[in-house]
Length: 81
Image (cartoon, rainbow, N blue to C red):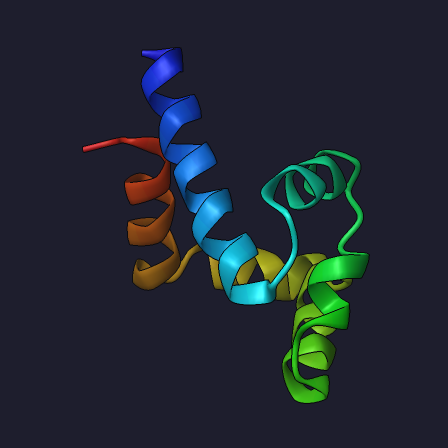
C-alpha cells in the first residue's frame, strides 16, 4: 500500500515539477524540507502571493483543506477511495 501511495505522490510531483519547470527531485526535496523557493519563483506573482498567504495562515489553510475540492485532490493523490 505504501508503494502505491509513493508512486502516486511521485507522479503528482512529476506533473507539478513539469508545470513549474523544475526537476522533480528538487521539488520533492524542497517540499520535504518545507521550502517552496523554486515553486514560488516559477509562479506568477499573484499566485505566489496567494500561496504564501494560504500557508502562513493556519486558519485559512485549514479552511482550504476542508473544501470538497481539496479533499478530493488529497484522496486522489493519496490513493484513498
